[in-house]
Image 1 (tube, rainbow, N blue to C red):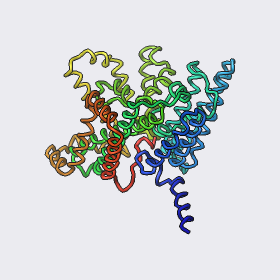
Image 2 (cartoon, one colour):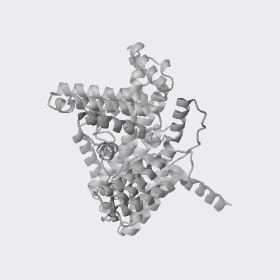
Image 3 (cartoon, helix red, strand yellow):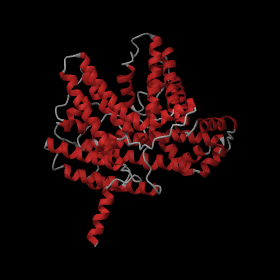
Image 4 (cartoon, one colour):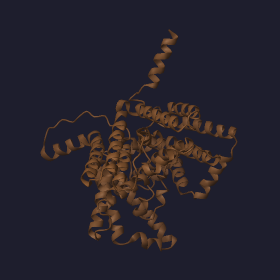
Length: 491
């Protein structure tokens, strides 16, 4: 009887639970990754065994995140692997283009159906006063990420920038690699595929960097982002008119910390986890709130997406090669579609349009080059303005409706009540401290980060174990009743 109950409980734990998807900041993931590390050492010297083991583990990871929808990862991989082969082998331009279109339509079809079907139905209903019923669709985690990643492979082959992969299992591993599968970074095939056949050689310094990134990312997400969200930000954005303008403004500043710590925290952990397995993923964030212009901001924020949009959309539209007017249009179109990538709502389209407009204005007046030649005071003003251009857009990014967004702005402008700031600090002391920590650590010089990383690297094994234990204990003290998903899982 006991053995039977144990087996049933084990099956339940290992099976997909829609209410408990597998997250980096969950207890199950800790055991999942430890299991991988224990058995990985038996496979990493054998290229085929290594790839097979990690592919199986990656598909299981996605199964625990989105159930049987892991077949979408396989489907996208099969289509793009075959399309890539035919694009490379055929000499007929029309056939090359045909298989490229097949790849793009498959990936955008997957993305469009699961993410935008109800958005288009709602838009049609609003425009034509129609009564089309919404479709009950489950949004698989990270569908925007793996479709973009897989699709870039065939585009690169079509452009002659990449040779096709010979083994399907290697390509499937590239698309499904679990650290970056559901929220990036979006990895290019030419960066990742060559690493598969390399020997796994992890230096002491790389272990130290991996631990630093994983622990820093975990603290950014589970301590700073989750705590200030649950205990302050969510309350204000749910009902902004109950709070003064001062509190609304603090909620906006707090949300800038939350989304950065949440998303960059995931990227940090993804890069660190991959490094422990012998793979190097690209940097995805580079202190974006230090940016002096919106142009620079998008060179620092979600770098893998912004560079993807630049290389595969903006340049394909003509970039800046067809005159100034066309350049501004291309910038606007790229950011409008980038906004739509973030979510199936006109709020995100307008959010993208706001940034497209800002990029175009900076290009018209040559602001990035102008400000680079100015003194530190002007650059500081540039950082301040850039951050607040971003902040205005993020009000509508976070708010559930335009009405809520405008209510927040109205409260800030007309009902500020400066004296409430001191009451906020007194009433939300820990929230305020975590917001300050979030900003301070963001602006800390790189050399300080390097020293912390070196300190972790040089710790003895016992010291590393104690540090890991301490961080896990600290996270547990801040943990809410339910583990909070990463913000970008919805994208």
